Image (spheres, rainbow, N blue to C red):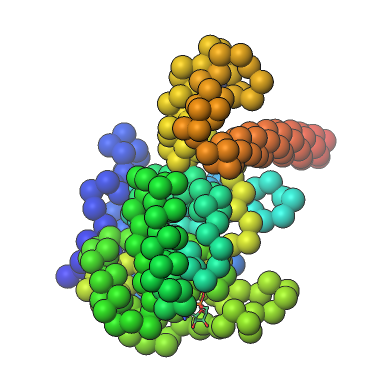
Length: 356
Ligand SMILES: Nc1nc2c(ncn2[C@@H]2O[C@H](COP(=O)(O)OP(=O)(O)OP(=O)(O)O)[C@@H](O)[C@H]2O)c(=O)[nH]1
Ligand SMILES: [Mg+2]
Ligand SMILES: [Zn+2]
């Protein structure tokens, strides 16, 4: 008997009613890990190494069309050591970011996440701007956030209280909690956030304690952790791969490597959700296309002057807006160029064939 619901399967992953009927031999399976060209999937019975069909790979017009960790797909199980991924099932949610560096491309982090556990270390400075960046990514993907402040043992009770107060005041609607992995009681409390059959994803900078948390939840040392001091200056991260893991009790968890850069492409929806009070004020600006910078009759600037909105939050809002618009424009331009190039190659090939 397969129990796909234990892997997080539900009715929302069915193909749309008007989609062509898939091959009856294909079964739903979840992507556990993704290598360069290979995958590990689970079909409810067992984990099986898998490859995707050439058709799926060639039909992909961007990284978004390829399987990511957490995706549900229709696969054909050939034998216990090989499955073929034929088709992706509709996604409930999708975590993505701009690839690091100058390149303008989307990178998929994980699919079908219910809640992102954004881990922030209490022994580092409270960086609300970085947290807003994570929240934009999470909201853009249609995912619930839960901020977990880690390493509680490294700060005093007063420092913790001040920290949490400031964070919660700045982001009143974001659920937050704190813990130390040194405290069994605090670890036990964390379980109350994790429900069976739901999928969670650990996010946060390198060294904040994501993998340590996973290990504690698993009750093993199966996954590598490394002290912040041991991390080399080349910025090597301890966790390098993403993997979907089933926890005791049945929650599903994906660990991720810490991200140095957190750029967004086309994240307008996420920005509007994270900066909802600014977004709402924007409706009252005199001009519909107000940039909230120099226009007269700007309700956002008025709120800023009245001290209703914090300057740093406002600045981060503008920065993220500019950045996402810029990346989106570069991304579209690149797609146009690629398409033109593709057409040209096709025309040349056609020409060649005709001359034969
Ligand atoms: N004092 C204290 N140290 C912790 C706690 N959680 C994690 N650490 C330490 O922090 C260091 C980094 O932990 P990791 O779990 O490797 O961090 P990570 O977030 O997985 O890092 P990357 O995989 O590089 O993204 C390790 O030395 C852990 O032992 C905690 O609650 N308290
Ligand atoms: Mg790690
Ligand atoms: Zn305005």
